Amino acid sequence: MRVEVESDTPLWFGPGSPVRAASAIAAFGDGWLVAQDDATHAAWLRPDGVTAVRVLDPVGGHDTFSSAAGTKHLKPDFEAAVTVDDGVLLLGSGSTAARMRAALVTAPGTVRIVDLTPVYHRIAAALGLPVDRLNLEGAARIGDRLRWFQRGNSAAGVPSAAVDVNLSALLAAAAPEVGSARRYDLGAVRGVALAVTDAVALPDGRMLVSAAAEDTPNAVDDGPVVGAALALLDDDRVLAVAAVPGGPHKIEGLAVRRVGPAGVSLIAVVDADDPDAASGRLDLRVTW
Image (cartoon, rainbow, N blue to C red):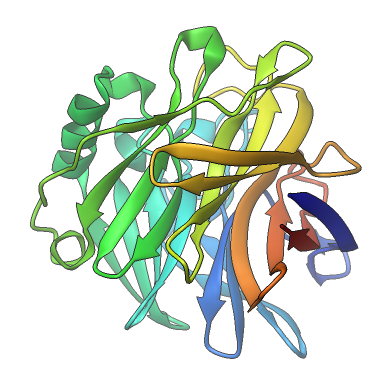
């Protein structure tokens, strides 16, 4: 497997207004909806530009959140996005009690917030983790199932893993049953383990996941990223791992643009871990 970066584009709403902390991407209308994990608005990438779409009411009077402002604990931390029949489902990471909710965005200005606290607790139990070590950062739809990925943290002894949940039940806030955990070892870069940050399903049933080697002691604090890769998975097997050239890019969201017999074209979004810096869009080509 080989990964090529075809283009690298900074994302801006307009002059002086960067797309912050891009954390997930999914097809939406005539473009792509990009979650900002430290803001109450998403970015809608369309052919004629980027517009803001509200996905959550202000939290404590704030629409953006940061460590410098002392508001990071309030951020929604939407870290996964999947296209569903009615729009895009944004999913919180579960890394704090405030991050255990979802936003179903059906149109600009039309959003339904769902409290998923019981689901996150069931997922923690299935993964054999204390709830405070959850960090669900990627998800992909497989028919009526959602495969939801826990981002690993080698410093905390937490492997990358995934569980399946019933998507219809999740959308109905019915606390679906959670499947058995699948665990993945994607290798390491300079002694830091690669950990899953997002996933996309391929037509043949396999999955591509993005992974970052981020040197951080926990699920909340950022750290230096020393490497990035894509990995090809077949259920619980790791078939191939390939480095993403350049960067290193902290890829946090993946979406499929085109699939061909020899590979796939993807859009990836990159979190700059700096609220004043524009997130990036990478157009990637993966060949087998």
